[in-house]
Length: 368
Length: 147
Image (tube, rainbow over all chains, first blue to last red; front, side):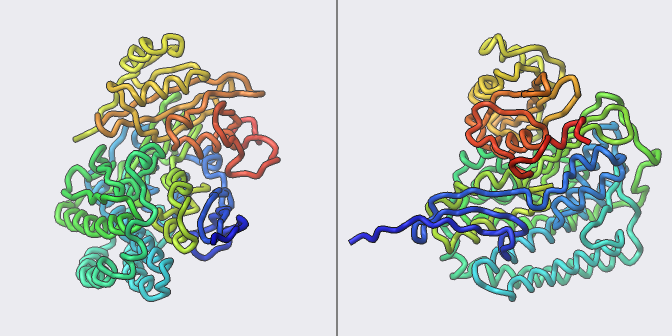
């Protein structure tokens, strides 16, 4: 005998502990099955693009920190690359290496958050998250040595980085790399072949490659679906053409693959960091530029990087003034949310939070 | 293994064969098309084997006061090339362009965002609602005449 059920609409968020910020999604359930999904955005909208039109080119760097606040370094980098393209300048080699190095440290920190929360959402409260945060904390300490800030770093500037490293940075970085090797192994041993994690995530919410591409998905989510596409390889910027690394690719695009790709990327980022340390040479870290930058009227630039969440792009248009005429931010988190419906429809309530967590969004970047 | 940018002229000449009315002009970086033909143009560029732009990177809207400009950044994953398609939208009262929602699903939130913040309607988008601000908000904040 079948039981007739009434559909029920539930609001998840915006004040929900596991939707990675103020994300709200209105879900209609039939029993335990999800039959309708509607994401509702905008709770953290600050108008960053409009604010950028009123600040000069260097001041906008501070706005980019507040986009994806778990990977501020990479946001700085994307914006600085766009401005450099606009002005037709290039930072000195040491500046490039420092940017690559800090961006990769930031990617590790961001992926550690993603993995920690992903496991937390599976029900392993506290412990795994503390394991990942223990290592992330060390990276933030390193950033503090570089620029005095842990989250809103504003370390990079158009034309290089804000200042050279303090002398005790390099021993501290070596110490971190030595300790992190063991810590990462511990996390991998705990999670990668964890039976509970595999049962809960394998085959759940798969994302076929063609859907991913059509939905403009980028970053680890796209690569988990088996698409080999990484902007660090395709259009190398800063020192990425000098370092050797692999691009981990998933096969099914399910929740496990998205988690797995991030775990592998942490390893690859470590490789890049080590190569940067070996290759970096003394020299200037920043171009001598006027305090207030001006670009040619009508100049345009689209600078993009492979951020921890996906393709982060800044489209700048200049009218010859001291601030960008238009500063469009292509945020990976917003566009990765296009697949929300595809991931959730037909799956159960219990998998919903995990699937959302596997996309790894950041609301600061979604709403801007 | 690096990306190449398809010149606007190549795109323009290719498009002229398929949709002669759509193309307005081109320069070295981009091709300009009519706003009402963007859907046709997008469909052609996505399915044509020469261009193969299966991936829509971003849609940007710029307010140049006399007109709005839409900029589509496109990428072909297989051919490893990028292209830029642009379109000028005139009028400040009811500016509109054709939606590319049915060609690239990734345009969904971006077109809604442009409607919300820049006030350009996309005809053919199934859910043309505000996305960042609330329904009933007065005006479109990214326009130059807003504040």
